[in-house]
Amino acid sequence: MKHFTKALLGAAAVVALMAGPSVAAEKAEVIHWWTSGGESAAVKVFADQFNAAGGEWVDAAIAGGEAARAAGINRIVGGNPPTAMQFNTGKQFEDLVAQGLLGNLDEVAKADGWDKFLSPVLVKAVSRDGHYFAVPVNIHSNNWLWYNTALLEANQIEPPKTWDELFAAMDKLKAAGVIPMAQSGDAWTQVLLFNDVLLGVGGRDLYLKVYGDNNVEAVKSPEFAKVVETFGKLREYGDPGQQGRQWNQATGLVVSGKAGFNFMGDWAKGEVIAAGLTPGKEVGCVPGIGNQVYWIGGDVFVFPKTDNADAQKAQALLAHTMLTPETQVAFNAKKGSVPVRGDVDTSKLDACAQAGLKLLGTENGSVPGFDFLQTPDKIGSIQDVIGQFWTTPSQAPADLQAKFADIIATE
Image (cartoon, rainbow, N blue to C red; front, side):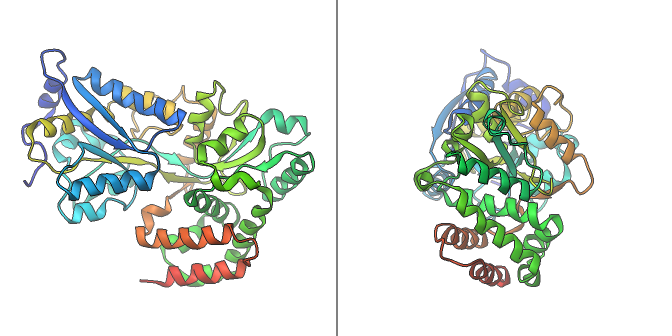
């Protein structure tokens, strides 16, 4: 089957699918990992919009990105694919494309004019060999610093702008008996923290040399050594409970005033909003401490190849619905991200989103996520060595630097 949903050859066909009660509901079983409070509120937007368009959303949430991806891939390979499944923006789904296991979305993309409202960066991220294989649904920035405004005020701390100010603030909170930095025990959050330091201390150019160019000399440089040393110093500001903690629980400590700071992507705003608070107000935000750069990440959905005509119709309808202007604005307002469409009104998004959008609109104000630039194998190796370093206080920064260089040098 060379093309996806041949029954839908243009915009008229897509609109016809949305005609409402006269069209039988098309079931779509969707595997995703959005299970926290804020994430659940966001994914409900997709479900409600799809159902209103004439579909029937069948939720198949699986906690944890790795677990959800593994379950979906196993089903695809086993011949019982879901209708759609979530991946992060990047190279995670390339093997499925190479093996011919995903349907392409060219017809829906042409009918809806994706080339007109998606940025070239996103077009490149979701297409392979000139064909669309994924629907991008959001743009996240991964390198935010969150803080509890009332807690900082109570301890006479100004929101930090530099790393020295941050360490001074955390020292003050530590002396006051407050958790300075809420951290999760999940390895991916430790990698996220490391990359926050790489951008914030090392800067945009060093980040791109390391991940974009696989420049081993950059990893061996004094500038990278300072990054690793700063990352190592952060180990002193967590608490013993972090090892069993999920990312949203770490964010929750800041939301509830039990911790001062948390490094997390802008999806943390979903937890702030779910708690009835306002991002940028009760929970403050810094779009990259030290160097403010928008670290582009996000989520996509892919659609496994199928010969089932009803499933094909459901896939086409879902792909269309996820990118309608109203769905994009409503979903991203809940998720904490910004829309992938460049033609929607973002003026009502929160203050943190506005700060992120400003960076996105400036020259050199953003970098592609490292999962755009690195293979899943290398990312896994990087995650392993960073996780080992973070949980082994006796391990010296020079050890991590050497291991990191070996990974980057690997072909």
